[in-house]
Image (cartoon, rainbow, N blue to C red):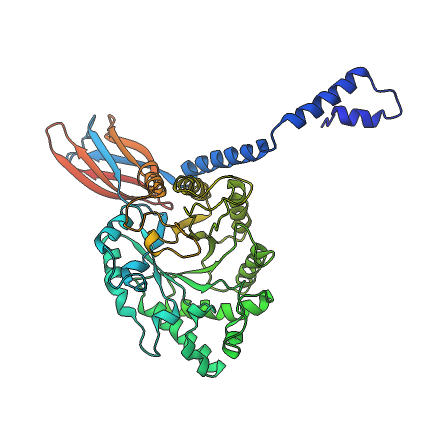
Amino acid sequence: MNNYSPLSNLKQHSCQKPHAWTIFTVAFTLIIICLVPPCYSKEKNTSEILRQANLNVEKYRKADAAISFHKKTGEPVKNTTVIIEQKTHDFLFGNIIFPLIGVLEKYDREIYRPKLFQKRFKDVFNFAIFPFYWSSYEKTPARPEWRKLIPVLQWCKENGITAKGHPLAWVEKGGTPTWLYDLPTKLAEELLKARITRIAKGFKDQIDIWDVVNEPTHTITWSEVMEKPYGQRYTSIPIKKIADWVEKCYRWAHQANPQATLIMNDYEQIVSDFIPDTRQRFYDLAAELKERGTPLNGLGLQAHAKEYWYSPKEIWDTLNFYEKLGYPLHITEFIPQSSGNNIKGNSKKGKWTKQAQAEFAEQFYRVCFGHPAVVSINWWGLSDRYIWSERPGGGLIDENYQPKPAYNKIENLIKKEWMTKLSMKTNDDGLINFRGFYGNYKITLKTKNGAVYTFNIHLDKNEANKWNFKL
């Protein structure tokens, strides 16, 4: 291959007097380099990644389908209108459901406008995260507050919303009730095992997706917390030492519910400013657990933006990095703000306004939905009324539950752009062919004499997606 350039030519003939044309070419090249804006390559990366993500949506999120219609006599139903309406997504688009359970009563004595909250939630999301922080779930030993969850779980079931529990084990204070500290370390671990087993078994068929261990690469081990309950919890310790206690938790959860999807969740996955090499540590822990045959079914990547604007390349590189492990990837905690604070990072300048939040959110969703390894995206807080204090204005709706621009952007993506709705006519064989997003569909056929027939189908990633209906 010829790698000729004017600069290499000068090097090869350095002992000769440079040709005037060579000098001109080099000078011209240097001028062009200086004139090209430094953001050009960044903009090129962004547009290329978004283009690739869009192509991937068509390739990985949809399937070809064929439906034929025949009369009872076997005659094909020709030239007849068929309406194709997607009703649900297989991909999980989620948010936390905490306010409906009443675990945030420090903000309101009564749950604020629950019906409107439910509407805003189900109009966009099909995935709800339920709180299982041990310190609030079981404030008093042997008195877990599971009853609060039941009505909301029932509402989710009635509305086709998949439930997920978060988390079963976490050594932060929210995951270790103070009454544990009076017990011997060994007994405390036995109670952790009992908690994981009881909850995973007890909520089977209601909650079959779990963040089992939360933030393991940033924290110390369970036994260390029990031995020094008021000491440092967030630090960097050897991976194998972490794996020893984490592995147990996944085996306990799997034994209690072998069908459950068990996720490991950690933060600082896009950028790191607390513990160096955070992504490598999380990768190494997942690889160690995989080597041990641990029943781990997915990796949870937190994406708390803080005030940082992640570039599409940073997101894409992160997803590519973890894809190599072979686990499905879950975006577990995403919460860009609309605080008015300055935007940090090299990708965008300005303030975190409501419009900026919406722009960033749309870009982030497009990149993640366009990556084949990602199976869920979860926004961490629906309303500014109950939002995490470190991410002011991080909700999709305001304190009175009115939609913000980000809500409208996400709703448009999930419910319009990424939903299949078509009107077609059958051919001479009574057949229609189409390509649609994975999910449940309502198929309506309207005959020329006014008769209406409806059918339900599910476009599945692992099926042939062919149907033959008789009228």
